[in-house]
Structures are given as structure tokens and as C-alpha cells.
Length: 71
Image 1 (tube, rainbow, N blue to C red):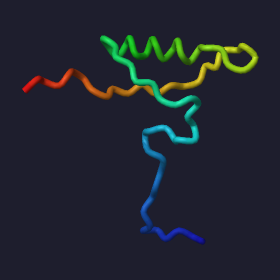
Image 2: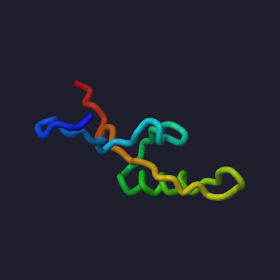
Image 3: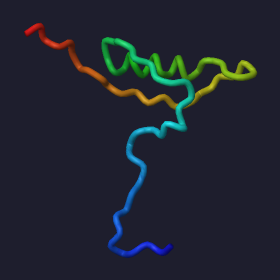
């Protein structure tokens, strides 16, 4: 079916596709973004099938920048 010239264009967003997930989600508390990236590198290099490092991409996202106030 041909697309009309004024039809909306859709594309994947900036977030990963659910089917691309390897093992699920990790939620970690760290002091900095750099520390989170360092841990992601470590997890990505863990051995997979046959003992070879996986070297799979890991998406690092900030969930909360500071603890909620006690108000």
C-alpha cells in the first residue's frame, strides 16, 4: 500500500526495543554517572556462552538525581 505524502512518519524512539534486552534491568545507586558507566562496562564484559565476554550494549539512565526531601 503506497504512503500518502502527508502521512505521518514514525520511527523508533531513543529507547531500546524490548526484544533487544539481554537479561533485564539493573537498578543501582552510585555516586556519579561515571561510576554507573564503569559498572555497565564491567557487567557488559562478563562471560557468556563458551566463556567469551558478551560485550553487549547497556543503556545507562538516571532515575533520580537526589533523595526526596523529608517535607
